[in-house]
Image (cartoon, rainbow, N blue to C red; front, side, top):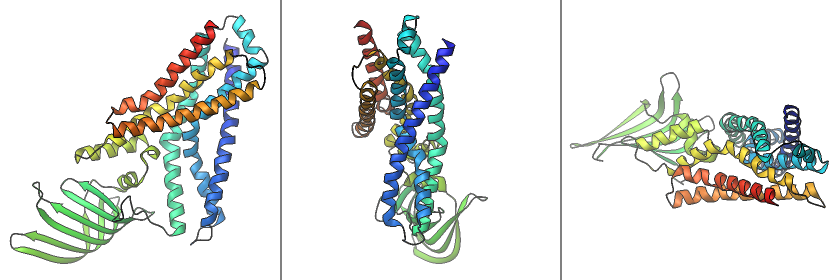
Length: 358
């Protein structure tokens, strides 16, 4: 069995790698087509567009991982079944349970790869890609609102008009209140830059208005130090899509939101999805196993690959659907993240039971 497991592992890894290359090549082609209209704007050239597309590939690979693993496993098992190799192994005593365990051991490598890509490669590549693109196009992040980004930090409400690619700030306004929400001061700064050594923001061209019982006092400062829990990493989290953040960044941001009594459900669901998602590869491999027991007379591999693509699309649809419903219906974050994988695992067990009873 050890020899067969190595042989099966080689076939699964090879088929999965080929499938991944095909999908990523397709995505890269269409992404490059989309970038062509921006070439020539500012300092954005063809080499920058190609670099941007290449840096987005880890993110695509992470999103496609369950589909790629499902199709790769289907192709490998279908190939073995078409040459009767899998039939020989079954007659030699390979039970469905043993085959499942074999695939699970093979799938551990996929889980580790998914964790690395999702936690390290994809977030870093996405940040780098967006920074390079914005720098060359001369753009800045303005946040989700027209007025920029709004952040609450203790008794302060902070508005940042623009976040530049190097995480420096433009158009900073800080509204400071007392614990009973009486306005104490308003600080307006033209620019801000984070000092890593002092762990504080250096605001430049500051106009500070202080309110007291005796009235308002306005002072102009060439520079002001602003210490806050708001860091460049936090700004990146605010402007980033939750699904493209690492689990560590999500945990940091959830803690910040909770400390300031703000809604965290959307980010909690994203965090649990991040934890559960790598294990979807094992679920997809379990779902592929029953297909090895099905005899398709014509176009065997092609039919199974098509079935794999449809199942993968359905998995992505359910993942997105349950995440949205989790936010709208206030479902437990863990349930929203686990239910799609649990449903597919139940389907795999049901299909295996059905093919065994045929």
